[in-house]
Length: 133
Image (cartoon, rainbow, N blue to C red):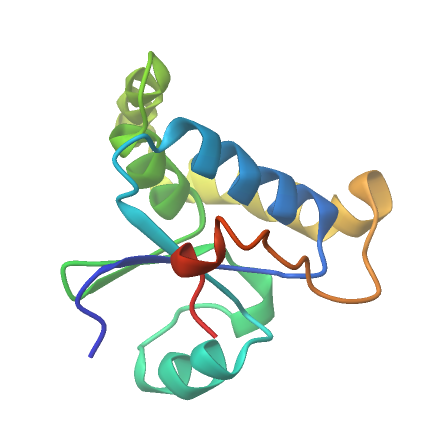
């Protein structure tokens, strides 16, 4: 069981890696930990979660023992960031059917628009403690 707030992301996706770096920059309280979907940690933990989508197709947040996917996960992350970013959580009132359709459209095109890495991004030694293998 995961007891901390963990963001699972596609480690070879440039958009996803940029999003993780954005969260790290704006998460002043270091609330979130991170795990690439390709990591041993994710491979061990995700099969036990009741996911609605395929593991590689979603941004997943596990927080307080609950699983959030796609746009709901992204909005819940924004809610915990510093600055004005928590205001984005107001979009939670948009029906998930609409929010997730937009999310899936971007996710489907992410490699074409933002590119893909050959291997997962390796965090600096200073950030290493925020990543779960």
